Image (cartoon, rainbow, N blue to C red; front, side):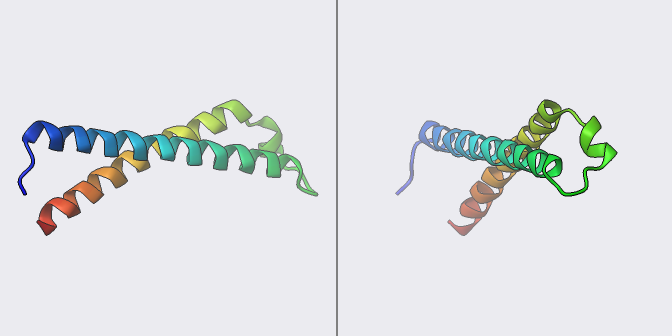
Length: 83
């Protein structure tokens, strides 16, 4: 069954947005948890004390956004070539 081009585009956009959103959540959570575990370690390093937790979380969210979008495009590319 051949879908119209606008439906394919909307499906791709939905896939990219949902994967990117999942990446933002996972990346931000992982960075935040890493920062907290750094502060609760038995020996706290100077790097741990000087890093800004908000900046570290935003960096993780940014990385998650890029990885999620890349994964979505990769999945769409693979699905396209299977047809």
